[in-house]
Structure formats: C-alpha cells, structure tokens
Length: 109
Image 1 (cartoon, rainbow, N blue to C red):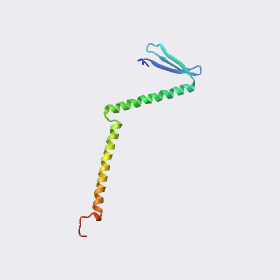
Image 2: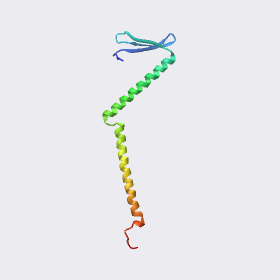
Image 3: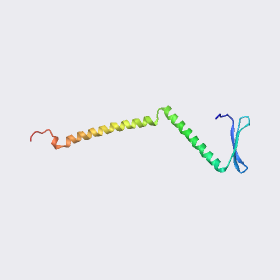
Image 4: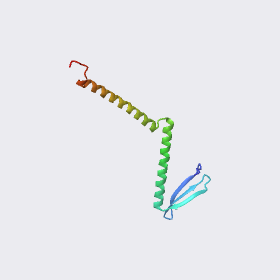
C-alpha cells in the first residue's frame, strides 16, 4: 500500500452505514466504501490486530539492535543455572564424604 503524505481518512455515517474514504493530499478521492456496522467492527478489529503486530515487530527490532534480545538473556540465565547446579552438587558430594563415619581415614579397626 502506498502511503501519501498529507492524505487522510474520512469516516462517517451515510445511508445508515459506516462510510470510509481516503482523500489524497490534492483532495482527490482515492478510496471509498460503505460498511454495515458489523463489518466496520470486524475491520476495526482486524486493523487493530495488525497494528499490534507491527508494534511488536518494532519492539523486537529495537531489542535486537540494542543487543538485549530475549534469546541472549535466556541463554545467559541457563548457563548460570547450569554453573550453580554443578557447584551445589559438588558441595553436596564433599559434605557427604566428610559426614560419613565409615569413610574416615582412621585405620584403628
């Protein structure tokens, strides 16, 4: 879709329907249509849905540009979690060895 600078959308009610038209910068009618109320609501919902997708896409592009993407953050968290899991297991192993009386180095038996 070509976007003209200075053009505008006009919306109103005409003949018991929602009337929509696009007016160019030079005041020429580019597009016009009339919609039943339910069609207008459906179109409004569809336009909102796609506008939200564009906003989400813009947000993700900005995150990628700044280097703070979700994937990188998740990867860092997963790596830290793995490291902390190893140290907990190692410390548990060490404490098990020292607490077990059968593993003592006394050979006085």
